[in-house]
Image (cartoon, rainbow, N blue to C red; front, top):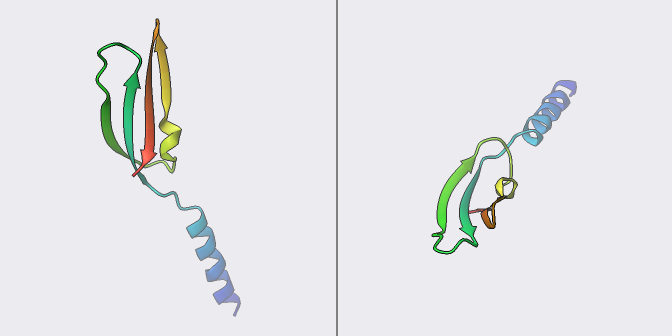
Length: 71
């Protein structure tokens, strides 16, 4: 009985610490005149959610934003 309990506890620990890869679609946009949005797909391999890759960068008067969502 103790062996069964030990194996069950190890199984729960192993499953709870497992990081899942996620498939994301990321799209860039900008307030710059003539900017063409770019869309790309990626797969996370570090256990992060897609929205953790969202960024916004300002250069001068223009802002470029990348928004990622899970497929």
